[in-house]
Length: 178
Image 1 (cartoon, rainbow, N blue to C red):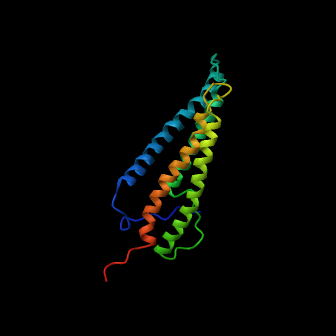
Image 2 (cartoon, one colour):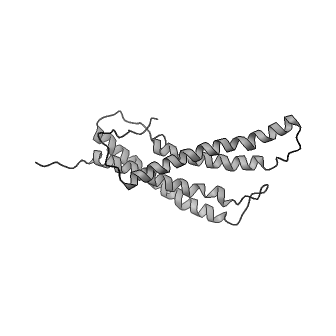
Image 3 (cartoon, rainbow, N blue to C red):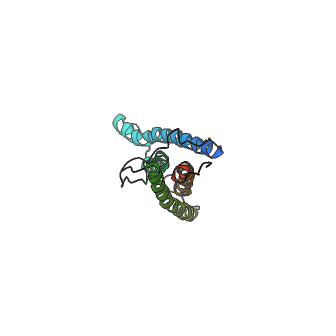
């Protein structure tokens, strides 16, 4: 496995609103990931510190909160990995030409697009199923956990759109004036 072929500056398209949107989403996801990783330390460390220090702190919901945070960390990690080209990419052929590699990248993006659409649609149903349910220990609405799935698919759609936009002119260059 290897990272998806990067588009060099020479191949780069003029930056439009879609590129700005994808960059902003990527930066937001990275920042949220940092916050969630730091927040995950609290429900994991709190019971250990309370036990060692002999503090009478109730930590019954800490495992549940840690699981909720972990689900979101995994989902956001999958969003970031797709943008970085580290998710859904298999380096099967050796590099042959820029055009061939871009066309293979488009085939892979098409397959990932199908999966992203399935994740959005099934994730939406998954979230609807949980809209009136809560977790056992803390009473957190389950839809807050389940909504990570359709959001994952939507982020994949944005990042796949960005990838297709960058690969298309390389895969199918326009003929210049003769």
